[in-house]
Image (cartoon, rainbow, N blue to C red):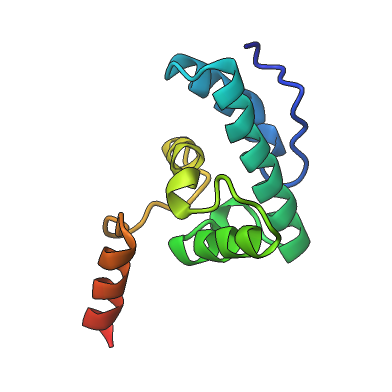
Length: 119
């Protein structure tokens, strides 16, 4: 897969698409899997633009809002925060998305327990 994917990313993540494509290739993603990740990036970027947000807004809560809206819109794939992990990892590594102060809960049960502990 070349860094010039047929997936067009518009919005605040647009400038990072070629690097993310290269990162996916370097991680061994198949061309098809990489396209799915880039499509998710394109959707997230459009969503951020429509919400008036930039990559610096990609906190855990914002990601949860995005994937919830994605599910509500009828998407059935790549509809969890975990699906966003490759993109968030890349954006955090290059310093354009915030790094969580503590590790984000990996499972729904961990998220419930974390919320319970903070109320």
